[in-house]
Length: 322
Image (cartoon, rainbow, N blue to C red; front, side, top):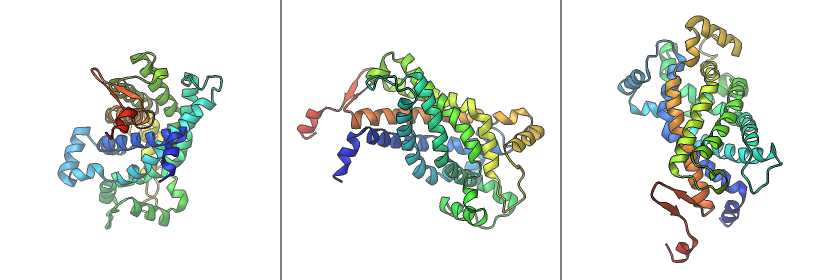
């Protein structure tokens, strides 16, 4: 354990660990809404989010809303940690003219976000594939008469590797990159812009209040989802296909787009958007708040303001045994 203080003392350690805390907060807070979004996207007559929620709880139990959460909880924590660390590096690298004492420029923020989104797709693609297969399992079971449903993410991975090989784990990778690269540029750009608008000067002094973190993070999530949502619908449909159970309905991104619009109209591209936006606000508000609080309070001895109070971690408290 001797390495831990030195690890946290470095920039890499701070960003990585704080990002991990943000990832945990995001998964736990938004997973039920994500399950509802996935089911809305997959089927024409899925109904409203409330009707799906009522049906899932009554027929499958409340636990069904969290089915498949183990995979993203384990991996998204690491993935989110890597996202914030990669973003911290790239946002500086894309605009090296900015002093290290100043916050990254908006140009660096957006380009760093785009680069981060492209790189993290390599980690996120297989995780989302497993998650989607688990979330849609009851629907697939009814259609394919599957006798032995998957018990968890490991079971899904074994099945995919057996029937589709390693390539099957990366089904939908191209569209994941196309979705995540621009979405992350919008994501980080919106967050940095909104926090500065809500609390001028906070990008440099780091003294924004908790409300600013929650609102800026929430709006960043909403903006990023709106800009990439049609691609997300196509991604869900492509990754939900199980080649071993039936012939593939879609033969690629263009084919999926063409058939989906022809059969269900252009509204299919926005189906479930309300649920996704609601989830995005909750999840990303939690992610950025957890990230910023962890970064400041745990590692930087900084302070977090609320409307009436400033909570500070002070070194003299530690010396007094508190």
